[in-house]
Length: 123
Image (cartoon, rainbow, N blue to C red):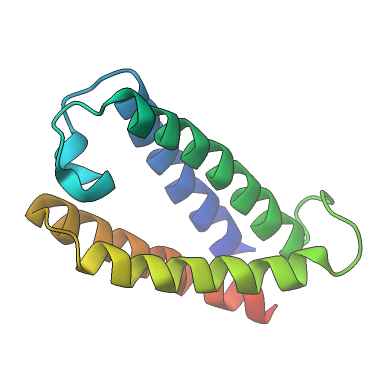
């Protein structure tokens, strides 16, 4: 349960970061390839979608940990493995970013997310 709560807290911080991007904060060099200081409309929409994805991931993790009952049957078991794979893929994608700030910030964050999601997936 501790890993699920820590994962949820980190996702909440990332959601705040994405929300700042949605509202035009000049921190775009930390996200979406780092090519824009202030994100264009299409990437702001992407940041809004990311917030929704973070919420779904948090509910899957909390469901798998037994903290909430959000999904039927074994959905959270399979879902957590998908989440783990998503974060592992994210490590690689962030590592190849052209943006040095994104690489140096988001790779460690994604490693932590993957590390937290693995014990949750294992149950």
